[in-house]
Each structure stands twice: as structure tokens, then as C-alpha cells.
Amino acid sequence: RADKDRRTLSILGATGSIGRSTADVVLQHRDAFDVEVVTAQSRVDELAEMAIQLGARLAVIGDVTRLASLRERLAGTGIAVAAGPAAIVEAASRPVDLVVAAIVGAAGLEPTLAAIDAGADIALANKECMVCAGALFNRRAAAASVRVLPVDSEHDAIFQSLEANNLRAVERITITASGGPFRTATLDEMRRATPAQALKHPRWAMGPKISIDSATMMNKGLELIEAHHLFDIESARLDVLVHPQSVVHGFVTYADGSVIAQLGAADMRIPISHCLNWPRRAETATPRLDLAALGTLTFEKPDLERFPALSIARTALENGDWATNILNAANEVAVAAFLDGTIEFLEIAATVEAVLERATATVGGTVLDTVEAVLALDGEGRRLAAERIEFRGRRAS
Ligand code: NAD
Ligand code: MG
Figure 1 (cartoon, rainbow, N blue to C red):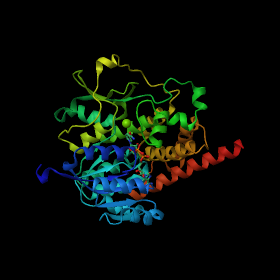
Figure 2 (cartoon, rainbow, N blue to C red; figure 1 turned 60 degrees about the vertical axis):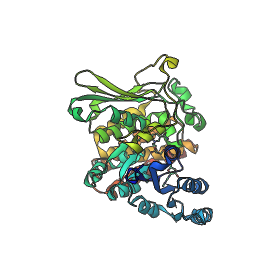
Figure 3 (cartoon, helix red, strand yellow; figure 1 turned 45 degrees about the horizontal axis):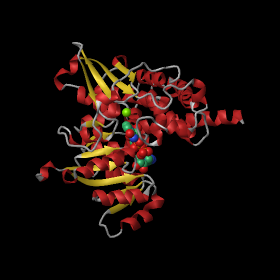
Figure 4 (cartoon, rainbow, N blue to C red; figure 1 turned 180 degrees about the vertical axis):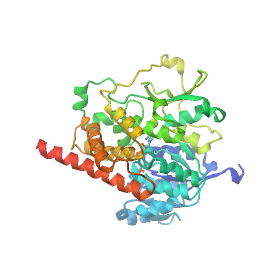
């Protein structure tokens, strides 16, 4: 390979599920990529090991109390170290071709925007940062003339199914959903669901936050919002279809009635590889689809009664960026509260809905024209969610 064919890249959230799959894709084509930065929040040992394996130049740990331990682990390797949220933002703005945004939650917003401002294309896994910033995210990307390549499997499927010359002939966009661990559960079973049950996804092995989002189907709600921003399409032309086999990841319906879909094994290395190599393709060590062995693919409408998060998110999308910002913030707090045993499973969506209702009167219509405004509103959403969880906890005890 000629040197100009090598891509330089940084991985934000390198120790997570997406980060590790990204490392896998990179290691399979060691000569195609130069890794500049890897970051993580707290797992020092894994971060150090990855930095060495990938030959990164800089490793950054979010938790400053772990800097000494990271330095010790990387002593003599020539890999630079840094710590703290500001160091992650600074590292994200190092010049590279592509930044893989794989931090979970709104915490990924500032590093991702720093990468955009520095002119890197973004392979976006961190959907929450797009959901909380709304149109601001796209404005920043457009101002820096960078591309946002969707890692999220459904959005990568849509990206692959869109024909550049026929964008105006797109009638509808559909993202599929596995239905999560509670697709066939009763409301009563869902009420009593434990974190262990909710974390057990039937198709994908993912980080804890997105696994719970899949169980409530808030993940599909966040993905509707993500699709709106990525593909500039309004809510009325965006559909969700439950497809338990997770083979068809998304499809585009064109004005002439043609439907173009992307199919593939449920393995995130496929969309990651697509983004890392785009517009080329490279071989991946992923399972190949065997449709004859599968035999049947099934599709069904989502049940909005058992999965209210989906309608709550759609309404937020229709109400604008302030609402999706609050939705995301309240959901992050509620998911954490469910995982630590403070609230019941069905209370996740109920909390988000109640917070949105309260926020409508106080911060409804807030314009998100700066990052400061985005983060302030996010803080308010978190405060309202924590308040409601505490209030209900006190009433119950
Ligand atoms: P994960 O929990 O496995 O990993 C999260 C990563 O972010 C870790 O490296 C962690 O150290 C880092 N991190 C966490 N909090 C941080 C903070 N406050 N500051 C800086 N870094 C922090 O999560 P994941 O499953 O890899 O998901 C990452 C993102 O990708 C999420 O937004 C998720 O919705 C999205 N996504 C994941 C999948 C998947 O298959 N896992 C699929 C589609 C989209
Ligand atoms: Mg997805």
C-alpha cells in the first residue's frame, strides 16, 4: 500500500463494546490504519493494552485519579499519556482523517465536536451526542466540511441503501429493531424485570446503557432522532419495524416503489469496517449470512403500549431539539437509576415522560444555538429526572 492510502484515526471510548470492535477491524488490516489516540473513562489496564496493541501515540484516561497507574502501565513504550475530560477533548482535536466517536452518552458531545472542528471525519456510534445537540451538531459538521459516517447498524444500512442521485425520490426510511429481550414479555413481566434480565440482549452484545435502551426500545427512539439528523428526513416519513432475526438492518423506499435494503450478520464490525474504509470496502472476519439456513425472516409492528419510550421519543423529535435534549438527559439518569436498583424497569420511560412534561412549561422551546446552551439544558433534564426519582423514592419508603 502507498502511504497515502493509510488512514490516521483516533478512537474515543476505545475500551467499550464499539471501541473493541473497532480495534478488531483495525488489527485485521494493520497496514491500512495509523492510530493516533485511544481514550477511556476508567479501565486503565484495558486502555494500556489497547494502546500498545494498536500502536497508538497517545492514551487518555477520563478519570484523573488513574493517571499514575496509566503512566506506569505504559512506561517505556513511548506512548504519551494524559487524563481528565479536558485532555480527552484536546486529544480528540489532534489532526487525523477519522475519529471514531464511541463514548456513551452526552459525555461524548464535546470531544466529538472538537474532532469536527479539527476537520476530522466522524464515524459516529455515540448517537446521544447527536440527539442532545440537535441541529447544532450538523451545523458544526457542515461548517468544518466533515463527513458524519453512521456506525449505528441501522443508519449504516440506510447510508448504504441511499443512492446519491436519487435523494429526492426517497419516500420513506425504515429502521429495523430486534425487539430486545422483552419483545414477547407481558407488561407484568416487564414491571418485575431485573437489570440482569434487561441486559440480556438476544442478538447483540453491547455496553450496559444501550442494552437497557434496547430493552425499553428507547434505543429505537434515539435512532429515529438520529436518522432525522443524518438523513434530513421528517418524522412522518420515518418508520420502525420489529424484525427479531436482525438480518435486515434498514431500508429505503423510493418513489417508484423500489425498496433497497442492507442485510448482514448482527456484528458491529460490519458497519464499523464500512465507515473506516468508506468509500472502499475491506474484508472482515465476520460471519457470512446463510439465508437458506435461516429460512424465514419475520417482521411486525412495534407495540407502543408495552414500549411507550418509542412514542415518547417520536413526540420529542416532533417538538424539536430542546425536547430531544431533555429526553436524552432524563433517559441517561433513569437508565443509571434502573441499573443501580433505584427504580423499576417501567419507571424508565415513565420518568422520561414526566420530565418532558415538566420541562415543557419551564424550558420548552429553548434554542440550542451554542454548546453551552446544549449542556445547560442537558443539566436541567438531569436535575428534573433526579428530582422525580428521589421524590417517588421518598413516597415509596
Ligand atoms: P460501552 O459502555 O461499552 O463503552 C463506552 C466507552 O465510553 C468506554 O470506553 C468508556 O470508557 C467510555 N466512557 C464512558 N463514560 C465516559 C465519559 N463520561 N467520558 C469519557 N468516556 C467515557 O458502550 P458501547 O456499547 O460501546 O456504546 C458506545 C456508543 O455507541 C453509545 O452511544 C451507543 O449507543 C452506541 N452504539 C453502540 C452499539 C453496540 O453494539 N455496542 C451499537 C450502536 C450504537
Ligand atoms: Mg442501532
